[in-house]
Length: 165
Image (cartoon, rainbow, N blue to C red; front, side):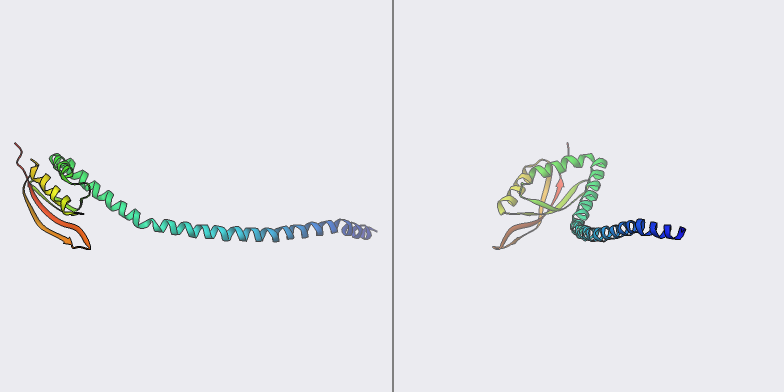
């Protein structure tokens, strides 16, 4: 008799266990599709963000170079405070559309290279430097133009600092 009770119980209650197990398997199977889709979308999103981060790599390197240059300038200005006034005067003589590419200076002189978009801007720079009481012995080492296609003026100027009284 106990065997028949067990079989009756197993067949009655067992079918619920089988149905519940099948339900869990179906839910897991459907969830797998959703999770695979989410995984693919996240992979695409990560790839896009990696490309965005990689595109900023060169910008970050440029910023680091500029920060190092600014640190060198700061150290120079702190060790030689009189140069700050001379650099300030140079910035005042520089037309807004004229840009420096290189600047080197010592205790008594400096030289710089730059680009000016027009002859008038270059002439303004020279005129302001000659009128300035900070600069003396202004020497234009080189001047070149790109011609009719590129009218920008490239220049290299060397100057001494006027003696302070």
